[in-house]
Amino acid sequence: MALKTSKEYLESVKKLSPRVYCGGKWVKGLLNNKITRSMVMANAAIYDLAGDPKYKDIMVATSHLTGEPINRNLNVARNIHDLDMRQEMALLTSQTVGTCNYRCVGCDALNSLASTTWEMDRDLKTKYNERFNKWLAFAQANDLAVSGAITDAKGDRKKRPSQQDEPDTFIHLVEKREDGIVVRGIKVSQSGAIGSHETLVLPGGALKEGEEAFALSFAVQNGAPGLTYICQYNAYSAEREYCEDEAEIGNPVFGQRETSTMVFDNVFIPWERVFLFGETKYCGRLVSRFAKAHRMNCGGACKVGFADLIIGGTALAAEYTGVDKVPHIQEKIIDMVRLSETSHACAIAAAMRGREEPKGSGVFLPDDLFGNAAKLNIAHGFWEIIKNAGDIGGGLVVTMPRLKDLEDPEVGPMLKKAFAAVAPADKRLKVAKFLQHWSAGLHGTGTWHGAGAPQTQRFMISVLTDFDAKKKMAKKLMGMKEE
Amino acid sequence: MKLALENDAGLETIAVKIGQEVRGSYSGLGGTFASFAYSCLDKKTIPGFHEKGLISEAELNEGGMLLVLSGKKTESELREIMDIAFENIGAFPGIGAKVKYIIDVRSKKAN
Image (cartoon, rainbow over all chains, first blue to last red; front, side, top):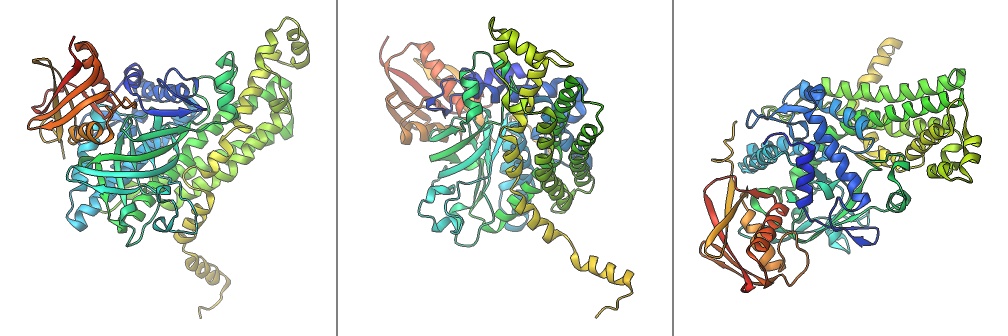
C-alpha cells in the first residue's frame, strides 16, 4: 500500500491508544473525544486530497527510494519542482481544512534529516542516512502520518540545556543500551502528534561540545510506552467540548489547531530509529535546514491558505451587509490580498531559487532569504489581515449570540429581525462565527510563533543579507569614492 | 537507491504463538521486538495498554519471549491484545518476511 485512503487512516487511528490527556480527562479513543477527533478528521482530509485525481500533481510524488507513488508529505524534495509542489501542498491543505496539515512539520523534518544524515555519513562515516532511508521507506510504504517535534520546554532561557535546574526541559539521553537508547524530557506545542503514527524528534536548536546528551534525533511511535500527550485546552476547546451541535463552531469539522505537550518518561528508542546521537556539531544544521523548509511552507503558503479563507469570509460579510461596493471596504480587502499574496510570492521564489544541500546529497532545500522573508512578512501581515476581517465583519464578530438561538421559538424571531440585512440572519451569523474563529481565535499568535518567532527571521535576514554590497552600490551611484 | 522492502529494508517479523500454534505475525522496522520487550520487561506494560497489572510474567528466551497475561483470557482476547500492542509500536499484521522472533503468549488462568 503506497497511498492510504482516509478510511484506512481512520481505521488505523482506531487501533492506536496513545496516552492522551485533554481538558481534565484521559482520552479513551481519539475519535470518541470531540477535540481530538477534530485533529484526526483534519488528517483524514489530507489523505483524501492525495486520493483526488484533481490534486495528484500537488499531493502525490514518486519515492526516490522505491519508485512508488507516495503522499508528498513523505517526499524528500529532489528538485525545484518538488519544492514548488511542496509549498503548493501547504497552500492547498490550509485552504481545505482551515487548520494545520498535521503532517507538515514531519515533512520538513524528514527533508532536513535526509540532508543532514547524508552529510554526517559523508563526514563521519556513520550509517545514519542508510538507517533513515529504511525508516522513510517503511513510512512511505505504509503511508504513515508523521508529525515533527522540535520545540523543547526550554526552562530558564538564560541557561544552556545542561545548566537547567530541571533537566527534563530538554529531551536528553538517560541510558545507552545495546539495542537502543532511553530518552526523557518534554517537547511543547506539538501540532497533531496525538493522531500521527510516528513523530520525528529533532533537537530544539544548535548545541555545543559537552551537550552530547541533548544531541538526539529519532522517530518515536505514537503509542511508545512512557510517552504522554497533554492536549492544549482553551475557550475554543471548551466550546467544542460542551456545545450541543458542532455545526455552530467557526470551523465545525476540523477545528482550531490542536497541539499537545509531549512528555517522554524514559521512552525506549531502538537504534534503527535513531538518526543523530551525540553529534552536537550537526544539530544547528539539522534545525536550520528544517527552519529553512518550514518558513517557506508554513509562512509563505500555509498561512496564505488561511488568509484566502479569511478574505473569502470577509468579502461575504461585506456582501451580506451591503457594503461590498464601498470604496474603503474594497481597499481593505485588496490590502488583505496584497499582504497574503506577497508572502506566497516569497514562498514561490524560495522554491524556485532552491538548491541541492549539501552538494551531492540529492536533497533540495528552499532559498533561505526568501523563506525567511515569507514568514516574517506573514507574521506581521496576518495581524493586519485579521484586523481588517474584524473591521469589515463588524462588532457582530465578537458580540453575536449563539447560532442555535435563531431556532428558539421565543428569541429566534427577535434575532432574525435584529440581524437580517441584505442576507438573512442565519447567513450573517454563520459568517460572523467563521470570522470570530480567525480573528478572535488562536491563529494570530499561532502564526506569529509557528516556524519560529519573527526575531529569528530578523536574525536570519541580517545574516543572509549582504549589506556591504548594498552600501557599495549606493556609493557607486552617488559617485562616492571607496575608502 | 531502490530499497526492496522485504529484503534489505531492515524489516523485522515477529510471530505470536498462542497455545501450540502460531496465530499471527507482525512486521515492523528493525527494533520492533526490542521496543516490545522493553515495554514488557522495564515498563511492565504492554504497548497501547497503559495500566499496570496486565502482565503476570514476562521473560526473554532464546527465540523471543514468554509472555503470560494476568486473569483468564480467551485466545481471541490474547490476539486482540497483541494486535493493539504491535499497532502502537508501528508494526503491522503479517507482511511475510522471515520470522526473527516468537512471542509465546499465554493466559495466567487456563480457559
